[in-house]
Image (cartoon, rainbow, N blue to C red):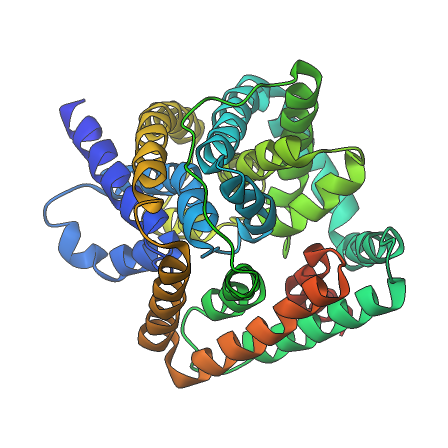
Length: 399
């Protein structure tokens, strides 16, 4: 029992690091641990390695939104949180934005675990029915997204296409490390920061008050995150970002606070349901869970139950950490001139991209930044930029 608790704490520490440092993804750490597994197995069991990875992955889903909201540096699961998070930050409510995502993460975690006896048998039945229709589902979602644009549907399509082409080029580029980091940082991160820099934004004093929750909105957002996240987690090619777009189609009248709850919930649901997916259909749709499947030769019901319990423990501790770290960020960020801070953040993202993805990744970042600015210029939704992930997946399944 003590060994398990120590493994959970190590995982939480690693999850905090991956959550707060842009570009250091849980998959990267998990793969590194898999590579070193022959050495690590001399000291700890395969189960303890798996526990470390699971604790890290769950903790990461609670903390990775902090750099997204305060620094504008998203990953594949938080990209769509940049714009509403940035709005909250500019209103002095960056802390509230983080709290909303934490509510989504913790609420969906508890709800998913409660419903897991119902969800688990459905996975085996639904999976064969939907697997062949993934590209058509994504086409329908993409078309619906464009048709809902009120300002200019044609320009929305152009933005979707440009982002999609950049996504195809980036994701098929050989020897490009962590391609999603420069791609999403450019489209959603640096582009948003440059717009706010150009408008001479002054960052107001950040409040550390809790958001006022609408019970109906919260319940709908959590329910949507569990429903859509459960389906997306066992279908190939669908991650939290794609699930978020589908979620907005399911819950059409969602507001900013509800959307942040949804984003927080989807990331966590995706991780938890991946355990059940591995148990029911022997397929892992998440990088961390794929690594766990390779470390554990057999994944049995007792492993599933143990990992769900560990998720609750890690999620509870991660909630405490996220609340306090968000408060620290809120109290610190206004002590620096906002324009100076934005320039430092942009420089930091550029440096990390160069270090992690090299010069080619840097070119992807610059191109993504240019494309990411266009929606703001034309006053249309930046959600069309998710074509960077949707179009490559659609073509992957159709071609």
